[in-house]
Length: 307
Image 1: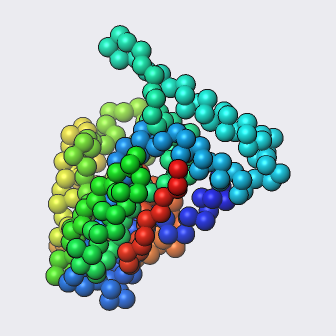
Image 2: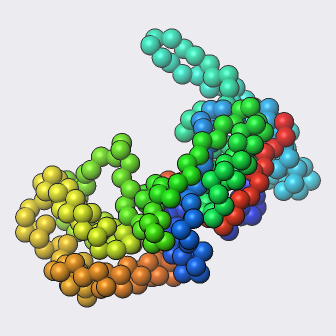
């Protein structure tokens, strides 16, 4: 499985920061045009909809390709398939006093289900950019929805989309990025009255401001986020001296007090680029989102395992 995933790793990004860096590279090589659209597509209820026989067949092909002497470690391919089928068929849950057996797909939240879903069809929250017309980009997606009756793909094709924790816009050939807040997300931070060491609260301030600067493309996008963060600190019970002092320390540490005092966009742009390049160069692995990101510049055919 590790060999299988390594082959797929190259075009994958696990953070909003890495995605923004790629988008800015895309803009810098003049690929961002007035016709550029952003495309997001995802499989609906993938974990619970994968056909068990199809998933087991895909797993068997994977094991045959990467195992040695039909064994993976101390387990034979046949035993792995037997154990996997047993795990899939032993999913039960209780609801309103009744017990039910799951007869399709795998259990949500199960590590095994996640692995099987990735083996069966490696699609999870895909992001693309394209300068192809809306009609031409929709056609292969509609065709993909006919490939497998168990897999349904939902998609959004627009000049402004939300992906991971980033809102992305192509506004008159200007790339604009800002923080995307999911509607279900609670606007809260660690309570000031928590028993955590005080440096935890200080680090929360620094890390959140760092995240906002990395994501927001200009000071106009940053300003409301900074204001909202102050409100969250107030709601968390933080003392006013703490609220006034520690955000200021972030700008002092980065020597950009003109952003703090005057919202200077030129200085902010320099800070944004510097921190963004540092985070990529240092191999920052912090996960700012829960999805896997693919960036491509053209339409590619979607492939499915035959069942």
